[in-house]
Image 1: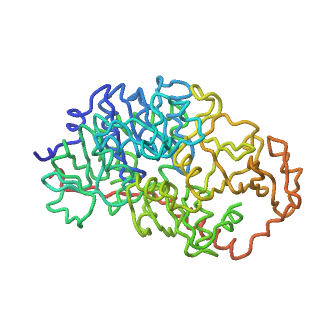
Image 2: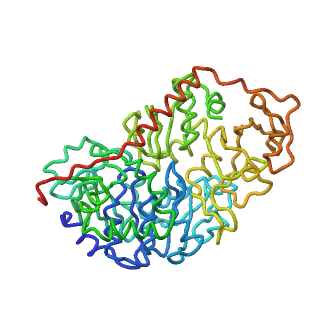
Image 3: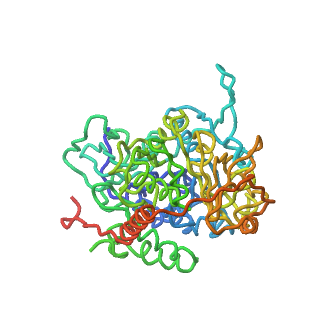
Length: 284
Length: 242
């Protein structure tokens, strides 16, 4: 069975439902902004959002009330400062309370890897002398190595209901090629029950080098062609990260009113990602 | 502060680089006295040589100038946990007298006054890099007697601030004032420190920035500022949906 080529609207309508655990991965690079915006447009609620770095996309989804939970390891606007909407949710329960499941990057990587491997938990030599285990006892424990006796940190596997990624290209059988910084995308993809991917282009042939990061089409439930789908994150070979936008977001998201006005105008007020890109002046 | 941090990096060392000031210090060192410094960013870029400083930890510039780009989990397992990293740089919102760091919350964890970004790579960098440098501006709000949350054990072999340099002393590894910038007094450092300051017997003076160091750092910041101000334009296909 190969992946269904469809519209992003249909992919989200069919595969992402209220109450699910959903991971939108991509580490700074290839963040699936278009998919996140479509989830906002379709007014999904009570999602448990999983991402190593929530970034602007989860700031937007949490601020718009899509989430009841957040599993993460670093929640800032990189190089800029706070994610004001994530902060408002945690500090003031606005727009409503957010349950957090907090880890380190190494821990999140281990959790995805365990999920992708079909194991119940993963181990690392981590969280040493920190307050994290006490703050998150439901998701951080210890295990003793049966061979050496070393006490290691044990973390439960992450197995999202749906993982959403953005990539440079898919071929017509739905095989997907990712190039550049991939973060924990591979592990998040293989840990998920359902995988939905947006791509810059659908091409006749991927021309992927041997050993390239190619996700086979039979692993992918749905693929949607969405040019610019990672903007304001980036897609190596297509467009750069809009660092100026990341800097500008700090002011937009600082107050609830300016945030809501911006989201109403640019996301809810546009039908699709091309409309969004034109609305924010990133495309003609 | 950036220059004082850069000077601590020896040529050929493998550095795990955080964004912001550590990234500036590591690249300054690479462009001056340590051309063979190996820079690893947690996004998965190994041996990267950026021409401008990245705003985020995963800017395209880092991937395009790297020896290799690998999955992020391998950065933490194959490189850091396996013991292949010489130096890690950390910053934080709070540091205590023993070099422990907080970048998680101000106030109570469950209902914080200020929710900070959190751990990122810090807990494992602190425990697994051979040596850790902490770089942060010093005030009584950042140098505190007691942390609101311990994000990482820290274990710095130096804390480099805008006033001077602290080094660990004795078995408890208490951080004591060891170096001062020209014109800064121990009294000024105490005024910006939330615990009773101790110093080494003879406090050294950090030699002032050389012209070359200043020139390279200014050039780097100028290139970076210009690059980050550029808005991105995307060309949408005109033919509609295929």
